[in-house]
Image 1: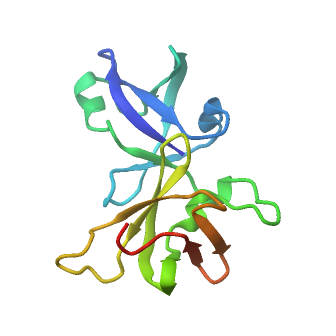
Image 2: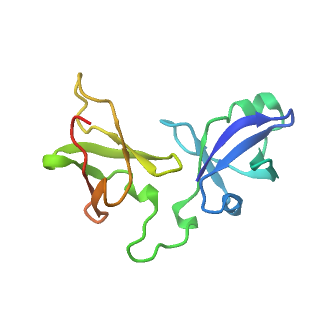
Length: 168
């Protein structure tokens, strides 16, 4: 849903990057859950927030100093799935792609979607190989672009077919 950025000021405020369609919608959800990649989610409450330049700054409950705020920089922001509105037929949330098997050219399994990264032009699937070979790639970054790259998506079967070679 978003990411905590750099510290702002000395009173515990942190810059926020929102990934919601309307950036201010991030603050409609409560509670937030935050984590660094590879860590468990933990619940936090927003004490205050306000627009700042082209984005927002936020103050989390219990974070009152710059030194405390530094501990939260770079953390991802999530919410409970049940807080999101239901999707229409043939719609999905990008988070639904996590855990899907990715099948490339020649029916080669490229791995499993471990996370989605938003890079503006198109979401990027981070695909981790299901069998980590010593000399093989640790992960692949594959743009999620229906048509030219993603040829088929079957969320029921948890499979994404891509026009992507094993050696790309």
